[in-house]
Length: 206
Image 1 (cartoon, rainbow, N blue to C red):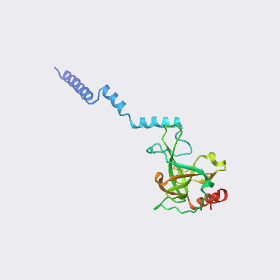
Image 2: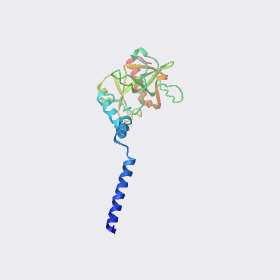
Image 3: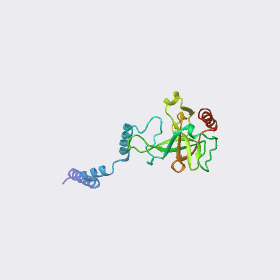
Image 4: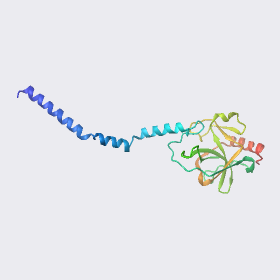
């Protein structure tokens, strides 16, 4: 066998060995299909869940996207007319103690549909009843701009997107302090006093 033939034969052997090494390290079709079905890529799953949530309307324009947060049971909340909860109101947030007036906290409220997880909503604390707190729900929906029962409080750290916010004045939410989430965020004193004055003037608070 002359030199060119030896070179050609060597190239054939190298190609055959490369194919064998490649086929030996790559899983078979059945293994790859099984892996795909049992361990789908995280990005594909996240995108699919996001599409489902958008279709169901879970993520709305007036609420932060908390798709990555763990699910939580709905907070047991009592909703009452604001005048029925009338009391003295004062600004006294205390990050080292209980949740007091002026602090912004989060509760979990039910969403439409029995299989939809509860959704976090922020509220500003305006009073207490022993182990429960009283608050006004916060919304970033601009449709509330022209509604009398809502009052603008500006933007704040309670909204991750920094949007303008409103509080609903005619309804008080009462929830156990054990069922809230705190993040060390407060409504600035000047804005809180504006809210307090509306409660005093329109709902008989003191």
